Length: 249
Ligand SMILES: Nc1ncnc2c1ncn2[C@@H]1O[C@H](COP(=O)(O)OP(=O)(O)OP(=O)(O)O)[C@@H](O)[C@H]1O
Ligand SMILES: [Mg+2]
Image (cartoon, rainbow, N blue to C red; front, side):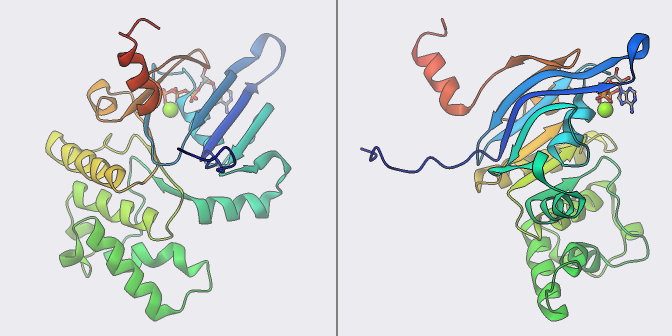
């Protein structure tokens, strides 16, 4: 049995009554209207909802790219509302690996150098950067393409390079915005399989998507509507408890 003094691991994300309001008066839009959400280490969560429901706003706040109008956001236990721009940039660089719909790779730059890029902002020696980048490429099954340019890679392969770049810093969170949005069915499957494998290895993944079959690959689905969370399948533990209780709660 666990000791009563055992320290609970801190959640990767804790949003507490987050509101984000754009405009004023008649033009006021509540992009987020009181969102409270906790995501624990090792979860694979999809955030879904119709266009305009607040997904991108949520992504920007979770990614420390934007500040809420009110409410508190704890990222890996750190209250982000108390940080200045420099400290927020450090959180983004050290704790979060970003993956975008459009890959955002640097053209005319080899895959391995794209992956090594985030390490250049830290004081990591060039040779070690290269070694870590090769390791990250290996983890996404692309070590054989290390010397290729983005233009020499398929969309799915480019996204895998982008995922390797997101993971090279060993972030606590992989934050993906429509990661399969620009890919065909086959490449999308490849990327979702990769996310499944990273999740199995203990990565924490938050993925924004508007495609139900993409969301179905996550372990937990959070549904947004009009800036609010209207449904949440909960953590694996919560789901197990729900089914054990006959699904009646
Ligand atoms: N900079 C802004 N200024 C004013 N209103 C904004 C701004 N950004 C977003 N909004 C509004 O906030 C609401 C939520 O927008 P958001 O971009 O988060 O939706 P979304 O779920 O990402 O939609 P989509 O699926 O189309 O990307 C929308 O009504 C949108 O018009
Ligand atoms: Mg959006």
